[in-house]
Length: 274
Image (cartoon, rainbow, N blue to C red; front, side):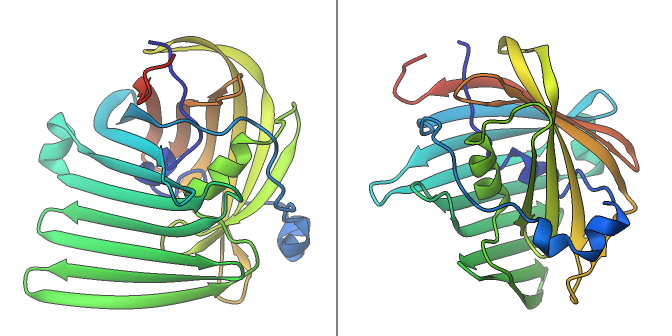
């Protein structure tokens, strides 16, 4: 079945990819470059399930299963479970569970909870959002040892990865269009610069699609709100279906260890409609 999957927390499973420096002029006055938060009028996402494969240098190394639902309370809940597979798992046995909650009407983030397990170490991160502040509590447990750290970042209209991508999905995305959004994935804030690079045709396991190519850059926001370039990430692109659903078809990123990718494998609506 050809399927649709709105922009969501697939990126969260790869981690904070897509980091690249901005020009000095932007870095000096970045706060004034943040785009107004004004969701567009695209149709609302429908409940669905989807599967993605993740890999490195062309080799599949992990999978993720994703479920998107709307609650009776008017919230979008996105659940994702994933982990390494095959040879990659023998080297790096990693599993992750993710729950992102956003207001379905405003697309504002409410909270994000992630549980990461790597061998005997378990890390739980809970991020809570208000209109002008984000609070992140990160608990680590390894054997009998535990630790906890709380971080607070104040800035108006901060987005989670989920809510930022849900918001981006509603925009016109005309060629050359640019959006700048402050996001807080887990423990740090980033300035995301999103540029529409153009249109193309792309084929993935679910079929062939007309696609919108979007280039993304991120810079870390320091404790004094200075922008900090990231040495490990070079560039990345995301291909979205060029239709009202705008599912993520493929992600490609060049990082310090090589080329990282994510690709849609299957998706179906819970209501059974195509």
